[in-house]
Length: 310
Image (cartoon, rainbow, N blue to C red; front, side, top):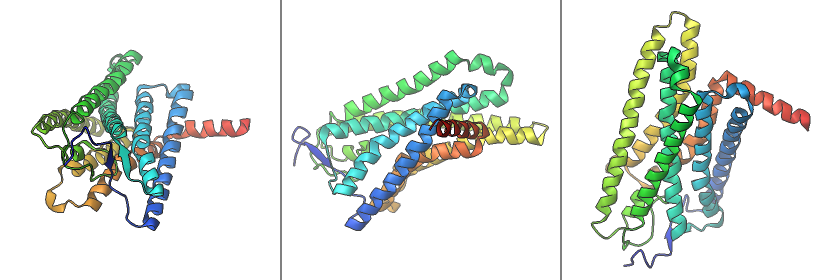
């Protein structure tokens, strides 16, 4: 038996048992992370440099790309290091930092997706009030509120989780530090306080989800009333990428934490956690770029100019 004061490191779940599979996972994670860095980096550069992309939709997309980059850089480098050097350990302070950053970036991503849904709702359902409701100052305030809410939420959960006494070893059943895994190591009733905090956060997440669903019901009703087929196609093309990203993110997170114990297994838990913490952020730029002609043109122009300068 040990307590939190004597724990100096945590043992993370290895991605594979054999050396060949460890190297394979390293290569896969390297490819995903490079693709995510390239895709999100291109979005950030294109939106920052393209004056015609300085609109609310692309401003929030830039923030989403920053959040996705942060999420990737929080979990993937450590997983790659563990796979390459076969050292699935992380220090106590490193684990606390990772818990905070994972909560912070995933929370900010979800809040930003909610705000982007509001942007689409105003654009389609209240186009005459778009400039008033989504002016530059309002957009900055909403983005700041999303980042600040995620920061305070992550800080509260991290401080509370790492104040718990731990006496059930130091092995975590996950490839990165995650609050539910740490709570399982707790040996006192005080872990119920964190469970209640997680329940409050779940209610907040559910409230955002209800808002997203309600908004899209109104959006689709408005789109179906557009007389021209071209107008309907344009409206759908701006909404579907966001809806796909939200669905992928929400479904994987819900399945990861609310799936029945009867179908739970280490390999399944690992696969689902990789989906929502690594794959979903990596896919965001691809999903948006494929359906947005303005963004594709801006990226193509930026790359052409960079090659000409060389």
